[in-house]
Each structure stands twice: as structure tokens, then as C-alpha cells.
Length: 546
Image (tube, rainbow, N blue to C red; front, side, top):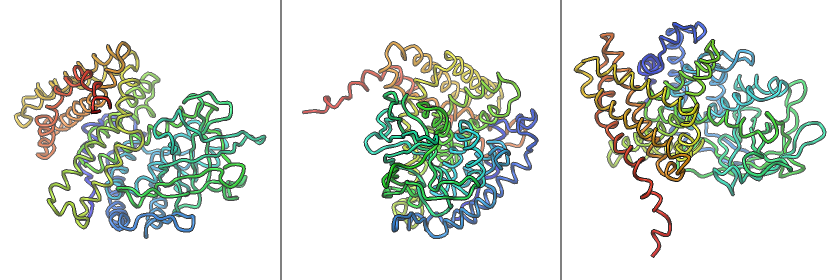
């Protein structure tokens, strides 16, 4: 079955959950109107259906390969990427200063859903480039911006993110890659990074690596990490490519899914004094800069979960709305509030959407019966590809810890209080609407939001006094958050549809199903959060020893 972009569904989500009409009316999209957004999504859908989707299954079968020290992507991959770049797709939301189109983030988010739904393995390459652009644009010096951003925005060069090392996994405090400063202001890097998506390929003439490393005199732990830009090929003063840098792909991981996406083991400085790199931001402050890229990637991975599931769109696009307000609002207070909202929703958007993506992909296999276990139907590939989503860009367990320990305390808890008030406002509107089509939606979502509020208050109380108890409940709390918020966003869309008299039966049915069969788990999850810590913490290795 050929992929077809759900353009109407995406636009409905942008209107109902992301308040698209309100954003346009208040001038927050810089003159971009609904017709323009529809046209962009339509064209992205054509590219997904006509170019990317036909390559997905063959690419999965062939995979990327390391041949004579070079990574070779599946047939048609390079040509598809050249079409992607030539079409300006990589420049949608990038600043005009660097050759971008400066379109709203909600537009780029919608297009990203289309590309990742049609070909997840392909979509990973621009996803990481977008994040690298954000990091360099935010913290790079003017020379780095002038040298690298125009080529990255145009798609002529791609970007990567290098965090993980073989001995450390997610624990960045154990990072060992070294960087030594030279007299000319550049640095020499030595070390090994693993799980580097599109760390090498032949689709572009240069690849720009953002690499975390430690200076010789750096403080221990994460406070001693710096971020460096390390190009595959050095760039001359006139912008032309120079010598090959001392960075290479030493191997490709053999993965459960996304076979066409090359996941590389990268070696820096194996052949000499080290790979040449340039500091991004300040020394020993690299993790702060990398979080710009990581947060962009985490939200994009949330959209990948949406792309796989095709039904968690409300949550991801609502968050994307806050991104646009954060960038485009006229008042400092509005921008600050929007930034705080983005920070709060980032771990939820990433974790909940990707968990749901895996669940829906698994159901897809089940619906096929025995044939779902056979590769030729395509259901198995979707399931295999989806399984990476809750793992990379910060495992969903890490997202839950981040939500509880760093995001709930934002503004002394006021950010979460304001968000809960907005959710309750929608629930009250559903209850007051008296539309029979909405069934018991208001009642069930009211219970879910109340459960979220109670669990949030409990988290705030125990986080400092009993942090182990808070961490024990972090994952069920994030699930509770996602169910309550997702149900409210779907209800908001359904309410808008019935109020205007243009009720789409599918929109209302999905919202009611979510509220009456899925969000009903929220009260139970609240009890797990509040009362399950002792049982969870008792599950030690010793408890299972003979």
C-alpha cells in the first residue's frame, strides 16, 4: 500500500490542538496563512509518497554497508536526498540569514511527520541536521556560522550528534573523548563514539559532526564537557573543501530495524595528532549547547512516534505551537512562558508519542495475523523500525526522570500549575457542551486531569524529601501525563468540530475512544505513583537471589 499523507488530519490537529487560526490571527506566523501551510504539507506528502515510500522496503532489505572504509547507502538513497535538498525541504524553518525560508515550526513539524511516516530511516538524516543547525546558530561564533550554516541549511552538508561512548552508554559523566587546544584556536580530538546516525555516507560532500569531548584540565563529571564542531572535510577560507579530517567510520551496527540508516562507530584522531575541531559555545559548557540539539531531536523523535502511529498527532503539534510562540512572540514574558511550556512538554512529547508508536506498530502486526510476522506485508518492518524510537535521543526512562526532577519544578511549580489549569478549562468546556456525540468524554477526562494534578502535587512534595520514591514513580507519572494531555487535546479537536457544525465522525470517535477506553487508566497510574514506590524499590537483584 502506497503511503498517503493525512493532510486533512494534520491540518485539523494544527487548528484544534495547536490553535493555528489563533496563531495566524495574532500575526505569530509572519504572514503565513492556512492555504500556504496546506500547500506545503501537500507537496511534502507528494515527495513522501512518490520518492521516499518506494525506497523504504528495498532500503530495509539492502541496508547501508561499510565497503572499503566508506558507507554506502541503499540504491536510490543519494538521488532521493539530492531531490530533498533541491526542493528546499531542509530549509523550511531555518532563519533567512542563512538561506532558510523561516517558515513556522508547526509547518516543518507537519512535513517531518510525512517524511518519517513514509520512510523513517531516511527521515533521520535531516532530523539530526536540523538539530545541529539549531545548536550552531544559537552558540557558534560568527565565523562558524558563516562557514557552515549556509551549506547545512541548503542540505549540501548534513550534521550529526556525537555523545555516546562504548564504555559509558547514557552516562555522559564518564565521557573520555579528549580535546587539546592548539595555538591557532582550534582543537585536536581523540576518541571513539558509538550509535552515530548517518555518521558517514556518500549523499553529501561533507558531514558536520558535533562532538562532546573533555579538555585536559576539565572538571570531573558533566560540568567538564565541551562541544566541538568537527567536519569530515576541512573547509578553506574561500569556502571550498580542503583536506580530509582525521575522522572515520570504523564500523556499522547491525540493528533490529532502520537498516537503511547507517549507525556508525566513529573514530577521531586515529591516524595522527587528532581530528581538527572548533569550539561551539564556551569551554566546559558543551552539554548546555548540546541540549539545544538534543531537545530539538527529542521533539522530532516524538513526531517520529506520531508518524509511526499516525494518531498521536494532537500532542506533538500542540507542543510545536509553543515552539513558534517561543520564537515569534512579541513580548518577553510571552516568549519566556512559551519556552517554559516547551521545556515541560519535551519529555512527554518524546516518550509518550514513541511508546504509543511502538504499541500501534505492534497492533499492526497483530491485525495481520500470521502474515504480520512475515516480512512481505511490511508490518514487521514498521514494528522493527519503531522499536528504536523509545531508546535514542535519551531513553524514555531518562525522559521520565527529566520530567520529574527538572521540568516539574520549573518556576517553583507554576509552569505545571498553569498547564493543568488549561487542561481543566478544556475539560470544563467539554462537560458544558452537552453534545451527545461526546459521550462521557468530559467525565473521563476530568478524572484523568484530576489524577494528574494529584500525582503532580505529590511529586512536588516528595522530590526533595524522598527522591527515590519520586524516581520510582517517574515512568508511570509520565504515562499518566501523556494520557491526560493527549485525551484533552483530542477532545479539544472534537469539541471544535461539533461546535462549528462540521463534525467529522472519525475525529469525534477517536477522541471519545481515547477518553473512555485509554484515559481511564489514569487514576490507576496515579495510585501507582503515590503508593507503588515501596514495592518498586524492593525489586532489587537480592530479592531474586536464591
